[in-house]
Length: 213
Image 1: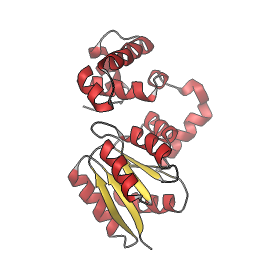
Image 2 (image 1 turned 60 degrees about the vertical axis):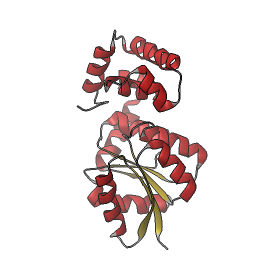
Image 3 (image 1 turned 90 degrees about the horizontal axis):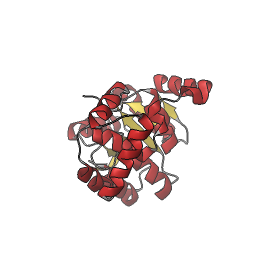
Image 4 (image 1 turned 30 degrees about the vertical axis):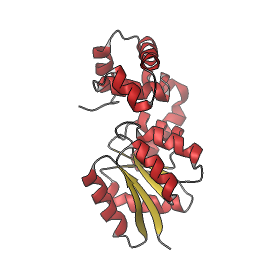
C-alpha cells in the first residue's frame, strides 16, 4: 500500500522537487499540496494523508501554527516539519508544537523518504543536528532558555512578522485577529525583551536567527 503524503510549502519549485523525491521512492504518493498554512489545514482535513510534510515558514499561518492546529483537529496524523533552520530554538518549538519529525531542506534529498517512512511506522525522525540540539536543551534545562523563548508561540509569530516589516493591520489579517490584539502582543514583546521599537525588534530577530535576511 502506498503511503499518502501531503506537501505544504509556499514555493512551487520546492514542492515539485519534494514530490519527485517522494514519488521516485515507489512506496509513497503525494495526495495533496498546499501553498500556505490555511490551505495546508484544509487539504489535510480533506485528504487525511498518512504523513503531512509542512514547511515552517509560510505566508499567513506558519508551519508551527499549522502543526499546533492539526494536532488538535487530527491528533493521529503524523506531522513532519521541513525547514531551512536547524537552530535549537526552532527544533524545540517544533517538537513542542507537536511535530514528530524535523528535516532541513538541505538534507531532504537524502533523508525525506526515510523520515516519512519512520513517521508512518509510528516513530520519530530528527536530523543528527536537531537531535543534538534537543538533547542539549534537555541536559541544560531551563538555564539554556534564550530571551526569545520567554515569548509565547503567538508572540514569536508576531515578532517574526514585525521584524520582516509587516504592519499591525497585515499581521491582524494573517492571523484573523483585531489590530488592537496585535498591538497588545507587540507591547508584550517589547516589554519581555526590553526593547523600544520595531527597529530593535528586527535587530533582535536577526541576531537570534528568528528571521534571515
